[in-house]
Amino acid sequence: MTKLRLAIVGAGPAGIYAADILLKAERGFDVSIDLFDQLPAPYGLVRYGVAPDHPRIKGIITALREVIDRGDIRLFGNVRYGEDITLDDLKRHYNAVIFATGAVRDASLTIPGVDLDGSYGAADFVSWYDGHPDVPRTWPLTASSVAVIGNGNVALDTARMLAKHAEDLLPTEIPDNVYEVLKDSAVTDVHVFGRRGPAQVKFTPLELRELGEMRDVEMVVYDEDFDYDESSKAAIASNKQVMVIDRVLQSWRTRPSANGATDPATGAEATASRRLHLHFFARPLEIVGDDHGRVAGIRYERTEPDGEGGVRGTGEIRQTAVQAVYRAVGYFGSPLPGIPFDEKHGVIPNREGQVLHKGESSSDTDPGNEPMPGVYATGWIKRGPVGLIGHTKSDAMETIKRVINGQSGWWNPASPSEESVVQLLQSRGIRYTNLDGWHNLDQHELALGEAAGRTRIKLVPRDEMVRVSNGDDAADA
Ligand SMILES: Cc1cc2nc3c(=O)[nH]c(=O)nc-3n(C[C@H](O)[C@H](O)[C@H](O)COP(=O)(O)OP(=O)(O)OC[C@H]3O[C@@H](n4cnc5c(N)ncnc54)[C@H](O)[C@@H]3O)c2cc1C
Image (cartoon, rainbow, N blue to C red):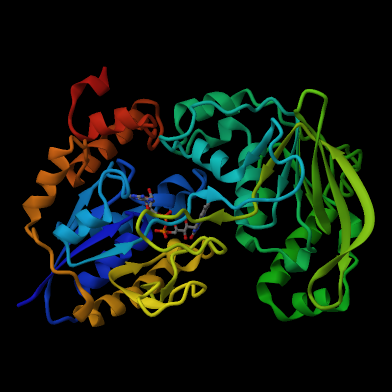
């Protein structure tokens, strides 16, 4: 029987689901799968994107783990496609490859002032608080007033992590270095700015409601944002998600705000030490700097509904004093050597997961829409950085169908044996980690947590992760 030797690059949910679906699919050939990731640990953004105080979502790791623990997928961590292993290498050892490399960097925001000291991409901040090995260990949290630009779930994660008291994160898996920095944060006010109205936001009700549950953090919303137009009213009446969002926001209008207001029920003054302000109909125009090139404020234009579900500028310009700005305007994919890349959308061009490239018959201006034999994509790098973890499963189903039906395009590798890949990595001196290594690291993190009365403490430095994974005692010293 024919055997498919398949490489999957990216051990996030998309890559793991793709492997699982292929192994369980009805097919007329055997399969052997090697899963590569640039990080020493698997699970992609579930480990390094989902916020630490979302244990239920982090729990998806249990399901992903069951897949790789079954023993029919080999894991090669700490192996970066494009540096440690190339497309030519893959062609020499496999019949096909699926790229599931996700999106890890911030989409760009083109307003003046983005390069000022104190202007940060939310993706960098997320990587920091989730203990990503490739970002600095410290983070400057000296600002008392902070702006977050964006109205999606990542903006709310960012705002929540900035506003929440560090002690309330201790039951989570946050790394020690993150706790130490958050504990000394000077923040008192977090301002979230979105250009649309409450009926058009992209965040989900659960994420919103959670903000109101933070200890010692007052939610501040502004009455002027709730003068709904007909299209907003229609959205609230017809869409359950929008209806719940509106209900949550309305409940905060009647709560005490530490903005000088009092509790309508008790008449007492609000006393929270931190405030989280939601500003709707506010289109950021410029991050304003001081004489030293540091962030000093954010200038924005008040918008209004355009009657068609969108917004238009009113010409009214406002400014709020802040000392730091976090840009949470979306994630963006990164190009991979030898693989076509759509610069506009940050994805690998594909048709239902089959990667497309310029063929011999393509003209110079043609972006290329001929199937690239043996090359497939799935997850955020296929579809763009939107959607929840569950969506990567349906992505993977579509891609696997293409893999199974694309047998005529598979490569003919010169060295298809499983051992030959191991020899290649060893000959290059690559300190790869494997499934046993992940178990070692997992146990080590759980033990660190247990010793401190916590569930887990993540290990951050890459070197230490690799040493623990590969059983080197030096890491325990
Ligand atoms: C801040 C944030 C919070 C989120 N919160 C939630 C949530 O609460 N609930 C929810 O359902 N979804 C959430 N999501 C969405 C969820 O994380 C994504 O839907 C999902 O992770 C996308 O899966 P993926 O496998 O395509 O990409 P990723 O999870 O990014 O995995 C890609 C993998 O590829 C690897 N890789 C990249 N380049 C290379 C290379 N050159 N060589 C080798 N390996 C490489 C990466 O290291 C990574 O492990 C969140 C996303 C973000 C950004």
